[in-house]
Amino acid sequence: MNYLDPQEKEEERRREERRRLAEIYAGMTDAELQNLGLRPASLTEVAWEALDDELDRRNLELLEEEAPEDREELELRELVTIRQFRDLPEALLAKGSLESAGIECFLADENLVRLDWFISNFIGGIKLNVRVADVENARKILDEPILEGLYVQGVGLYEQPRCPKCQSLDVNFQELDRPIAYMSAFLRLPMPVQRPAWRCHACDAEWEDESD
Image (cartoon, rainbow, N blue to C red; front, side, top):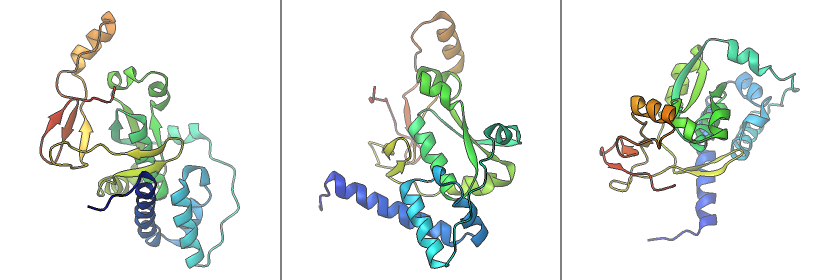
């Protein structure tokens, strides 16, 4: 077995993410690439490098940056929730994947969860919203094979949990029983988890969250 130290492992993940983004950018139009370049703050370092490579390959220049669109205007549009997340890093990972592909999106209830993680389960987690016209493409991107790790702006390296039984990355954290959750919050009692916290979609294994 070849052993990679943490730095080599992170570099390999960056190369893998850059290859994935290069394929996405290669399928985009010139206008889509240039519009994506107008939102550098929404791109990770790896995404920007991949975008810059594709622009150079096509001999395209970046457009002059326009005035940023008001966030409230975006929220007033008709939006669709396509994913819900318990943890902020996982939500930012999905958001970064969509933005790197040029899909406009935003996270609802992000600030509430930042203030108090306990609230995440109570309100149904952080919601990832996109425009109606982008729903199909956004879901396709999020349904792509799951990466072991990805650099998320503001978070650093996020590592996707693995199933301890089959080692699949297709796992998610299950929600609390809602009636019990509401009653527990109302009475200010500890919020009991009705079932094991994590579930694997590949083999149906369940296990408790030991991260806390």
